[in-house]
Image 1 (cartoon, helix red, strand yellow):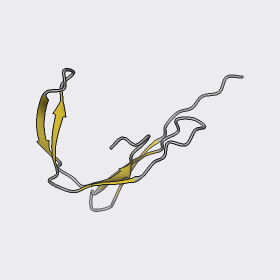
Image 2 (cartoon, rainbow, N blue to C red; image 1 turned 30 degrees about the vertical axis):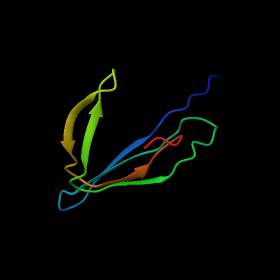
Image 3 (tube, helix red, strand yellow; image 1 turned 60 degrees about the vertical axis):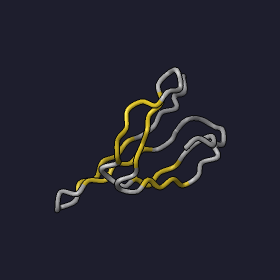
Length: 73
């Protein structure tokens, strides 16, 4: 028998149409040193290109609460 490590996604839709998404972090059997991460509504992002220069800029349309992993934001 082969083992599989996979993530599980879920979507909950409220009566008023509000939606909440979630996902597990089933990456294996090691500690990912996760921390709670909060990204507020309107947070400004700047992407990086492969050569390290600034890329696309955007603002968060929604607030997010999640977990980071391995010390990466």
